[in-house]
Length: 313
Length: 252
Ligand SMILES: [Fe+2]
Ligand SMILES: [Fe+2]
Image (tube, rainbow over all chains, first blue to last red; front, side, top):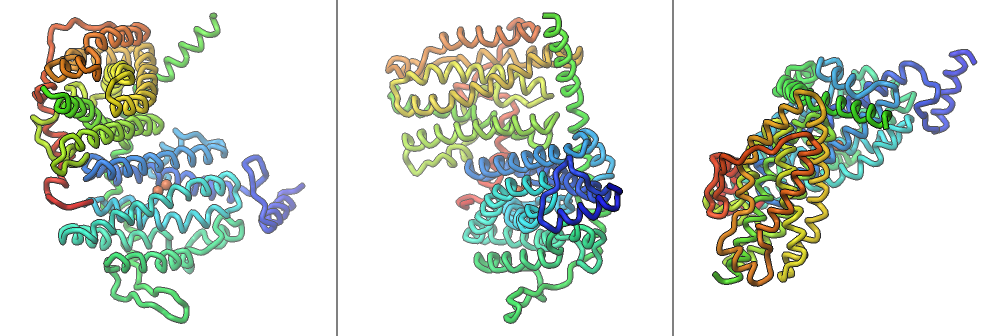
């Protein structure tokens, strides 16, 4: 088969709803897009451990500590799982980590915002994981088998995170005035970054059309964002939180919550590395990765010695 | 000393040790040498928070007076904590954390084995469940110490330095007072001299296999039974208790 025929066949398989597996033929651009997306997703899970880890030691009850620690572990586990999915493309984890640390690979921009009070932990679980679920439920239908399967597994856990995050917010909104103020403050700071998680408008998204054709995405950024807003606004109102958007109105005909303009300048500033915590997140990752180098070397050296001994025996 | 009072005190000793070590291990979150170890350490931390909670709940029922697991965990002052001193020692590098984990999980392993035979039903139930967890903690940390001891020159030097540093806190784990006397007489808690012997056998095996030598005991630091701590505990508590102290009476 010529490459052109292969491409036609590939598109037929996609259109028929078949899953593409790592050993199957795929266009270079498909491979590249998926590798970029999966490794970026893995990095997001790992970098996301930092803002949440920032409150582990200060979590205000034994139960809260256990839930938060378990959540962060889940996220790290998602990271491991996604790194393995990316490794099916023949790249290894250390290479991906290097790309992260040099800025060649990106991670979700939302983690470049700081966690400044305990309600931020609630807001991350509720809003950030909530937005991730909307996106990942869509990705569970994507055409690349290993990624789709990873998403099915991961989505289940994200559902717990979202509910636990909402529970923190609800408890604080039912608490003292100080707690309510903290919850509203967290809402004000995390609302817009959560909407930005869905990426640029369809009209200005660089990757959308090809990704849709190949079913790497099966729904557009704007429609996913709208679904998230519709779901979340009602949850916010239910516990007495104000959505920080003066233009928020309910459209009875479309049954959508219409929302105000997203600050795309801010979005691009953060994506391009100049958000409040971009520098801190990467510096942290590099610092502890370097500090662990002697441990990794020792494990390799010990493994080699063992191998030698085994072959002598 | 009344038995109930002794049981209460004994709960705090074990629960405080677990809480403080859990807090220490949680510091590794996002800081592990590899992602797998990051997760392993916070997983041990999670087990220990759970163990602490079980015993605080038991202690709270004895104390009455509206005490809860959380009020015990978060609202006492330094001198009212009875965690073993080794648990509050800083994480240091990965070698310090792993050596500390071997020393302490081996101790928990033998202590919990003995508590499985306790005349106190709560202790028995606690120990049976917790024993499974600490056996894993011991295996995990032993494997690492053996790996580090036999890895590179650097990892060997670091591991030996860790053992030299921490050994001085091991006597404290086996100290006994009137609480132990009361509970031993009732068949509720073991004689720590016996635990000390089996512990020594276990850790000697690990360190021998790791080619590390056990240092001389010329500096012994103890005091946990009386709530005399090292300077580290106060800092752990100020961080841990921050929200509880800043917003008294709030529920989270
Ligand atoms: Fe996740
Ligand atoms: Fe999550």
